[in-house]
Length: 230
Image 1 (cartoon, helix red, strand yellow):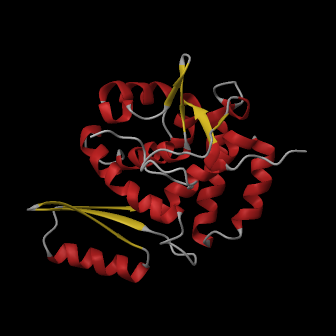
Image 2 (cartoon, rainbow, N blue to C red):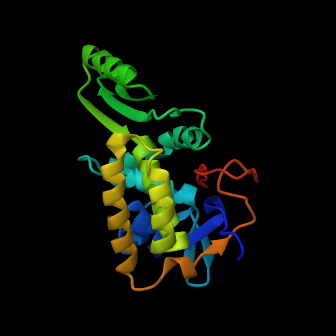
């Protein structure tokens, strides 16, 4: 029996990528129509557009940032700004040894500042610092959790619920205890969102040659910087 292709080499159609990221397909289509940067994502094929995991990670980060009372036009630059951090997490350069990476965005009188930490003590210190500097608003995002959800969703979409469930149970012990209930809930929710379309994503995959979006390299990465033209 042939080995399953690695996750980074798999692309999924728009509807599946939207389900993994937490959007409806209609919303992603509207965002692509509204925002030229998002229209550059994905690889057209016939009447569909196929996304890789890195591009879907950008959509997932944007979905999380959109929980704030800001327009998507304001949230997109912030999401793009976090993608290099996401790449470093995927490469294991930060957020190792069970430590989650937190992204902090502080709105100060002089403008917005993005900062990230991978230590709870550093998170507390950074929040205290921004408060002392008179921040108007503060937003904290567990970026590691977002990426874990994308990887989990890609497993379900790529390998099907049964095989992904077995892989998930094997992996769960390696995740922080506080993250495990959230991931278990997310597994169920993503499975339901994918099933709602009535067609198996695992049979609609495309296997790439290893070249993912961004930076023009062919080295595989779990989360790659998306194709966005300036």
